[in-house]
Image 1 (cartoon, rainbow, N blue to C red):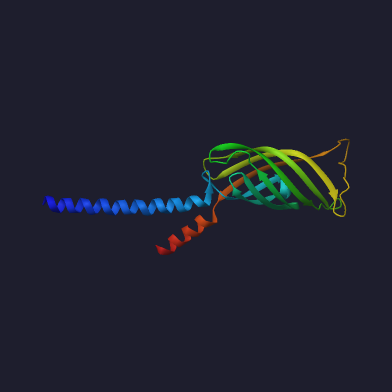
Image 2: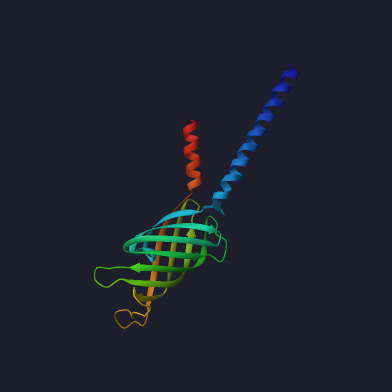
Amino acid sequence: MKSVLLIAMTFSCLFSWGQNEIDSATVADLKSTEFGGLYKSSISVNVGGTSGFIGGSFEHFVNPHLQLEIGGGFPACGIGLNVYPWKVKRASERFMIAYKGVYLNTPWRLPVYQHAIVVGLTFFTEKKWNWTFNVGPMYIHSTDNFNFIPPEGDSPMSAMLNIKGSYRFSFEVMKRKRELNKMD
């Protein structure tokens, strides 16, 4: 009886050890879809920034310090390059410097290009949400030349303000989840 119990315990330990190896390999593979516990991709709702007055954007981390952005909304579309001097990680806030290039085409004036260097903070939550606030000076010129267009009123320069709520996700994790659901 003792030998049967010893054999059963041995097989139980071997099978559970093998399962741990499979799980840790899967976890290590899924770590390639994130930086610092953050998924590399996110979709956002913006006020200002690359989407004009209001709209949405898609962001993707190229590495833990560099994020690319493309956005659109009313009445604009644009691109962005966000630089984080310190590595991004979950449940933290990070200072950022960004370039935003926007094509703005409002019904009440001629289309223009806007270029801004903004600084701000991004708050990465424990869950899958980011909150970003940034502001900076903006250079505005017409679409046919680079001549500066001064802002209306007495102000010598324009400013770009961006407030953004983002939801992080991973295409790779979504794909694996679909594959696992097909196997069930």
